Image (cartoon, rainbow, N blue to C red; front, side, top):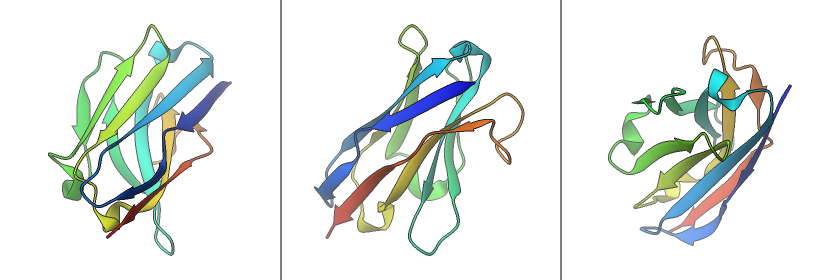
Length: 119
């Protein structure tokens, strides 16, 4: 089992920055690719970015390219999502996930953290 706990969400104004953290415990953190998803009200959950055990990242969501960056600290079993120039349309619950196979069906999910961006 891997337990994932997100933190760092909150209410901010448009243009602000937030850094989300996801702390992992349980099985070996480096064995998993980590990712961030988000789900806005009334919308499906969408994959934002994935990061491999070595730190290589793939951004899957065009609307956040250049604004969001993902990193991981394997020594701290933590993955981060730095979000800059936030927009109201970034409002969503943000989830981290861990997978050894595919992002279509991650092995583990965090409980989510709310990010609300006011205009």
